[in-house]
Image (cartoon, rainbow, N blue to C red):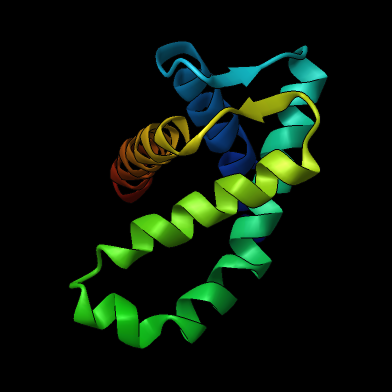
Length: 122
């Protein structure tokens, strides 16, 4: 049950992060309703579960050599894959992709920190 709860938390966290990125980054647009954002966030969560670890494994030496900065490229690749598989999301160019990656990563980090903070107090 804990695994399902974390999966649902990641879906809502990704949904919030995508909406924040779409609001603040010109060229990073999302056109859809509540169901569309949940489906898009679910696709992003599945990409983060299955594809991102493979990319991190194969590019591990480069991540180590760049002191972790290459992980931004891997996060951008996951958003690019999401752009391919999700019709409501449109990312127009590399700069909106980079800014969107930074915002999605930051929002997910903050929400994960808040979640762990409240979870450990119980």
